[in-house]
Image 1 (cartoon, helix red, strand yellow):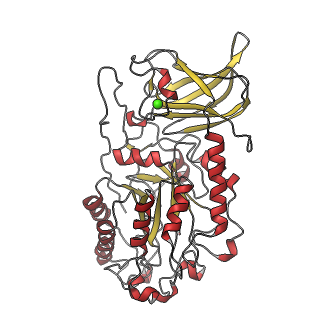
Image 2 (cartoon, rainbow, N blue to C red):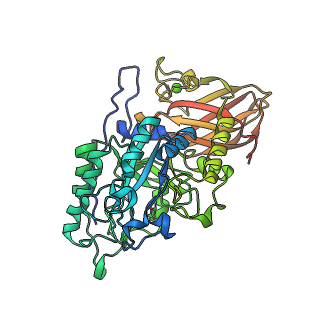
Length: 473
Ligand code: FUL
Ligand code: CA
């Protein structure tokens, strides 16, 4: 299998006057930038597996197995919205091939089931509910299909493209299209050679530059694990290697490579952290008491969003078609923790060692606006100092690069005043869209960030100091 890569090196539309620094290296497309700003999206695995308890359905399940008696997509959307998720991606078709809409390439779908006399359409309901709630709608459409009789032949590529076309042309606008990397064998051991040009072309035809996920992009990449963490170092820049379907020609540390990306990589292909709120991707009653706690979700947040990735948290609807109360309680606890921790930026002022121009001074990092930024000057080791009230402890430092101008910072250190000088209390590598550094609990009148190594002079949109009282670590 060979992916073809789209040239993603576009110049940022918002720049450049003489007062503004030039973009550096690959930069996000407008759709990718919007995607970064969502920070967290929800995944909803739903289908025959919700009823069989399997993680990978066989493809031979009866159409009538799928039978939610109180499907309530408005509930999913309102829970997602309240908890601060920017959109929901649903498994329109998982590996078993059962389709949650009337798939023109298959009879294995809701349209050929007794659920609502074959008139039910989960994609229609969820897309409408997301629209109503003001959040994004995305689709997962497994290329691997254990039901389709043509799987393993060229005919399957056309059938899959037709399925995809019917989704991307009917339920948009979409914010993300998800191509799962799992690829098993078809009947008689036949392997499918996917026609990615055809598939991505269909998506582009109807959804323009929508972010497309696959293991290696082109819209965003897999982070290399399903445990909820990006690499400590995480570049959104990445240079994917064309690889075989069975991955046999990939380096052994491929997963780590996906988690950290490429310093100086050729394309903007940021990492997405997909992880489930439960042990499995699909709901099963036996896991109702194994839902991740708010504390665990917060830890995942620090290790995904806090490392410059986007979090895709799976919350699987139950067999009735609603979210389970245990999942909702956990999500509410998680939201409450985020609100508590990030309610108040404890930094009171910002000064810098120098500026690129008077249009991009340090106080831009405290105005709550991502689009305004401090642009460091081009000489020496740039430094940004945040002033703080010495009566208020903090233990979290948030930094955001203005990634519209490219990802630049490779290494930084954090100091506090110590006698006549400064003492280093923490250090980090990449920043990207957002970096949350866990500091020891600190009381100080100032925090200085030293940008030790950058590929180009730093451009910092926002910075802040916060206190996480409960999970101080
Ligand atoms: C994997 C799939 O095999 C799992 O079932 C799940 O959908 C996960 C998000 O991706 O590759
Ligand atoms: Ca700003």
